[in-house]
Each structure stands twice: as structure tokens, then as C-alpha cells.
Length: 121
Image: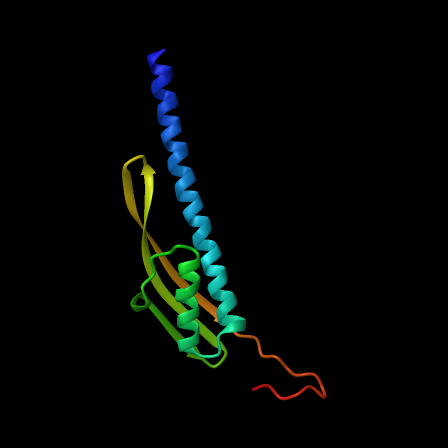
């Protein structure tokens, strides 16, 4: 009986850790997709993209410092590199600072205006 209870406790702890790590990883993937979306369609320059990334990090409750992000542009290619550490509670009363790194390379599409469309500003 005691062996069964110990096995169930271990399984419960593993399930708890998997849930917390999985939910943070899902948040990380959503954050990366939002950065890609902002770089492709919403930000016109590096300063605007940087402020948009910090805003997105706040929305997803990600402890991202602007000093940990670098943005480079080469013609139509935007590269966003960065990292952050997020404490994840693996077992009750024990958090582990999980390291997440960003290395996004985005190709900004060129939009050809339709004939007769007003010029873009």
C-alpha cells in the first residue's frame, strides 16, 4: 500500500512539473510567433520593433529586459536575438530558472501596390 502511494506521489510530482514546463514552453512559442508577426507587419524600424517586443513580453508575463535583445536589419531580413530566464515551479516550493533564447530570422515581405492605389507613407 505504501509503495502504491509513493508511486502515485511521484507520478503526481512529474505531472505537475510537466504541466508547468509545458505551459511555459507554449507561452514561449506564442511569444516567438508574436515577435515574428510584429517584425513582418507592424514595426517600421528597430526602435518601434523593440518597443513592440517589450510590450508583447509584458502581455505574456515574460521577464524580458530590453538589454537582452538585439535587432539587425539587412535589406528585407530582420534578425531578432535575445534571451530571458523565467522561474518555473517544478515541484511545490521549488522554482528553477529556466533559460529561454530567441533567434528569429524574419523575411519582411515586399508589398507591391495595386495599380491606382495611393502611395504608402
